[in-house]
Length: 288
Image 1 (cartoon, rainbow, N blue to C red):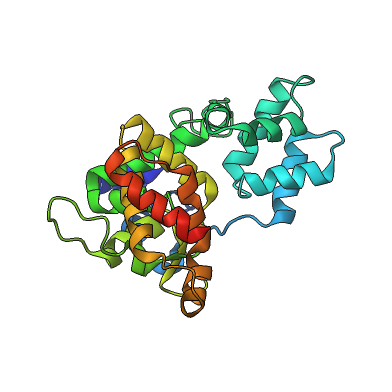
Image 2 (cartoon, rainbow, N blue to C red):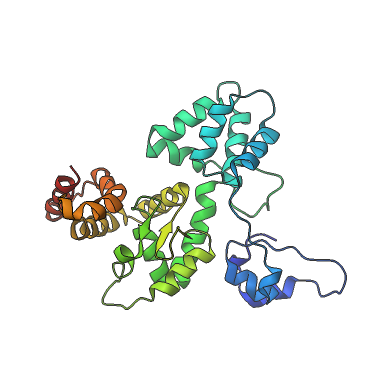
């Protein structure tokens, strides 16, 4: 069955055969949707991210032929070892061979956000996937983003904000109360659980620190770009870092080290509105 989060619970139950024989395998990006159908945690199998070894095996099985292992591993790291991303990359390379190689695909993926979006938005047909499902990486995630925005708008706002941070070590203290809108109240624990259930966000080494795949962050920003909301969340991010990042003095050194990976990204987010240029410049000054 394709992503069961796209259908109402009653519709999902209606199409399931009722029999004491055999088994039904359901895949979903939403843990809650899966739980509605099976009713017990022990009947839910969580698929963990692929290891480097399995990702390499998948790539080589699909591509065949000789390859430069170092180049392949670097490409797999850039694709976060995600099976769909790997499958789509291999299909793209095979369809365009010999002009497109692993080296060229990796170079194009890194060249610019525009080139990366172009590659990840290519819908290469896969006979093993449901014909109704999106075959592009960006398209697949953006279906989930729209679903979350409709049913959990505050969780979608939290995802939007988190996409501007460094993908690792996102502290709860910087995001928990900074994504409200129009004086609305938010439940951070509920919103972060929604994002975790869709595997868009994961817990870090500690329970108050979070991580995201780089491709999920990129897909989120491209989604915001389509909705013309990038500048709004860029400004929110700059304001957070201006408040949080202290002057680089000895007594603040520990906090500066913790926040530096996030603060240095501000250089890439020069705001359009002049009212935010002062905050942007202040963060850059402290980082320098």
